[in-house]
Amino acid sequence: MKKVYYLLAMLMVTQFAMAQGGAFGPRVSVVSTELNLENNINAVQAGSAEFGYQSGVFARLNLGPVMLMPELLLTDTQSSITQNNLQADLSFNKIDVPVLLGVKFLFLRLQAGPTFSFLTKAESDVNGAIADIKDNYNSTTVGYQAGVGMDLLNLLAIDLKYEGNLSNFADASSFLNTDQRQSQIVLAIGLKLISRKKD
Picture 1 (cartoon, rainbow, N blue to C red):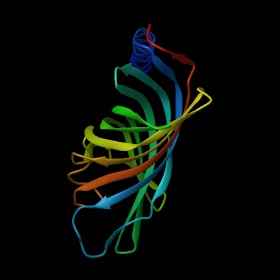
Picture 2 (cartoon, rainbow, N blue to C red):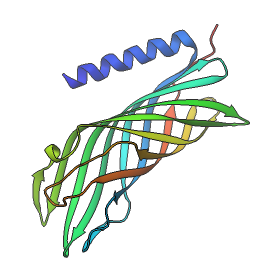
Picture 3 (tube, rainbow, N blue to C red):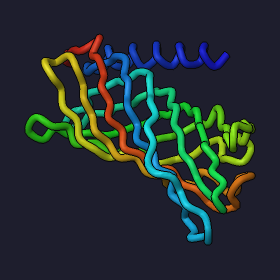
Picture 4 (cartoon, rainbow, N blue to C red):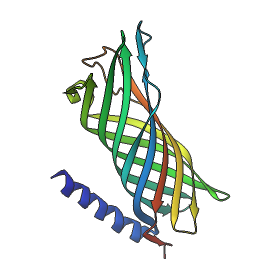
């Protein structure tokens, strides 16, 4: 059923992009994710940044002097935390929906806006023991993205963005009883299958 919703959303975004003028196409991203601990707790340490990936679609809608740039992405990220020499490797699958506004500055796009995340899977791996920890995390969170982008040959859309959270990612977990927030750097490449100016 989720795949049906995903396809319907892609079709709606495609039609809107064609009507308004702009661009639409598939997008892939490399994500550098770091799990930050809000509270300083003895013997607890967040691991170094790890790489994940995103795949999905993007649209760019021309609205006069600004551009509306929604995306629909499937995201896979990893993090780790250590407490008393015990390490937990965490993996998360989400549906991310950034909705950014952008303006042109020379050959660059300056862009910022909210991003909505819907958690679909969360697991921990402690010494090979894998556990489902999805219930320990908020199913929906709101964050923000800001960054720059550029187009190459009117075919590729390249973006470099920073993402932070505006709401709690977790209130508690089975491994660590503290609020946790994820921040990440996103390097994205999109292929403009549809690109046209508004009539």
